[in-house]
Length: 251
Length: 251
Image (cartoon, rainbow over all chains, first blue to last red; front, side):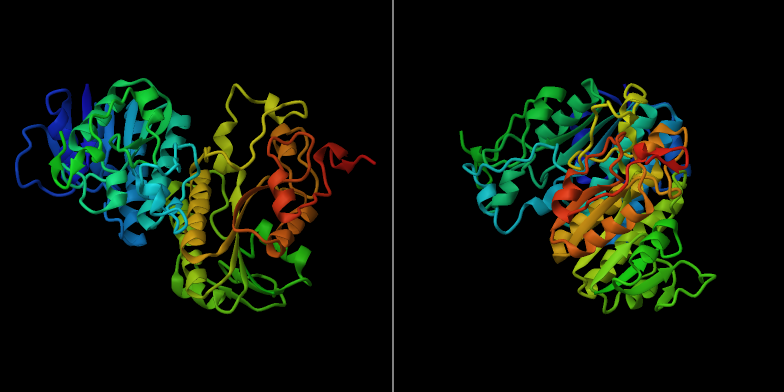
């Protein structure tokens, strides 16, 4: 399967590519020239420029679209251009080129404002009962979150109008290959390196129409349901932040 | 109550202003100079330009935000600028100026892709059972619909971050002051002139946090629930497209 990965220079992009390097026929798209040659075909360019995106998309079976301004504090002007317009442009090129599947990197920030002062920090704890399952309406906590929720809606439109299979993965925290220390929220939404590669592998393999799933490890503290990812994608997370004490795995 | 109406030159804008002219202390914002003097204070400008919007918003108690490209076939580039960026800018100015309430003109097109080939035309008929109630995730049928669904999410963000009361009115069809003839879909989502003014009046008066309601008359053919508008806003529609035969009301 020929797969285009946009945002190949970012943290999620590198994690997906490194974890699945041998499983797919990759094409990478970078924002700027990578410092190391990736060893597979790649292009550079702006995702909001259809002239840059079309040649990257041409001939691929699936797109994993990760490119965009990844900063949770990114200003409106930047996410409007890089994330909202960029995502529309990638889908537009995918539709024009007949791509059958797009996996879109959404974010916990699309629903960040569910984390109200009344619910936190209890919701970050293993005995907290609050659980989001992906059927809720978006509730972004910042401009970045607005842009990610909008990207999901753009995908819905291209699914309905062009029959593209779309999987939106609301990614948690992929900071290090161990959960953050002394940070309850981060432990709740930790996504390990191998679970990150695995959920993208499943999103490339499974059959679906339009899905919104949460991309986190099977953390005791989680407040995102993994039901849909398990059921539709066959996601089987291997990690759980509760099995780590600081940066050491507890055997 | 001092109320700013953006998009005052459009069809919905003129209908709201004419219907509620004497009930509020109006300020109008036009895209370009109106051909007739409205008789109340007004400004002209671009809603995506904060320098144009801020003076219009200053000192008002509520904003009814209708401005944008209203064409269902509007291209992405136009709705990205006029509708998405414009709506963000209006909310940004409202937040900066401490405005307590924003009523946002959303659209049936935010959920237009629910009208699939399998459901239509049965869903447009009085005995059709399909009903949307506003809790569903958006499913736009065109780029205009993407922009309207995004405007709702922008409102959600400003409600959560700045405690602005936000009412999104998914407006049906306000074409003439009678239902369209020989057009089932149009009869299903007809919004009469007086119901249009009334629902905006209720949205200015009622107490709520964040709402998504459907703005149509009480049509027998409707596939949008009016429950939420009735319950939260106290909306009491006076019209029903089934009471019209062609352009004549059936008594």
